[in-house]
Length: 294
Image 1 (cartoon, rainbow, N blue to C red):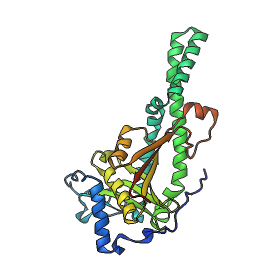
Image 2: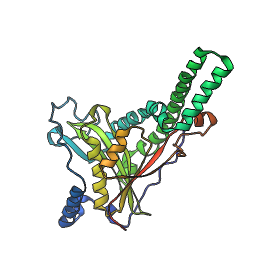
Image 3: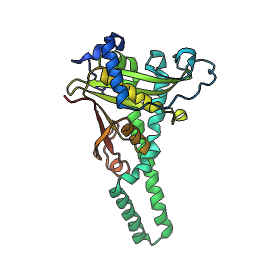
Image 4: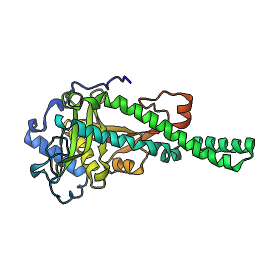
């Protein structure tokens, strides 16, 4: 499947092209102090464990000195496959979540399914067949969720996630970070500046499921907020179709405000066929963290 690459910001009117090291010391210290005042401290990193053989989780990257502890740093080209794997695994988790747990967000669909079961009973007078209807509907939801999610993954893995360095590390105003724990890449996040409204968009946040609950996602989110502060942007925005409540609580804990949701969002890879509309629904949520008034 061919997908157009996302529009990339090549230039910003503020300090998007500056590295942190290029900022005057007093200015950088003041901005970082402001960031510290906005968000409470993270929980301490887990105690260091033994260094795994082979280094950085097969990604060829290096973690913090000695390979121990949690470190959030800029992406390196050798970590391409590790970052793609974490992104892929995180998106694949959306299949059962969207198919089953996500049904609770769509009462009209629930009502339609109930009517189909009632119609089956009215036509057949068979309790067995009527009881099989919900199972069949859920099976179809799983099938179409998998179909759409795999199509979305195909788009993403052949667009920005095909060459992270080219899409996020080279254009001014964009960046991609990895979380490295004990020498292993365990999380990712990206940022892309939008010059038109002076905002930064948080993208591609995902943490390896084996390392969740350690504050890694919050540390990645704060790195994007720091990135936006250092560049003088007015706000950080994000959009998500996440079903899990924990994801939304994470955004709120970082200071984001929920700006609304829509059931009409078209996920890349959707065909909008009648069957797809019947068995695949997704709710798109918008969040915004205002850093300063324009």
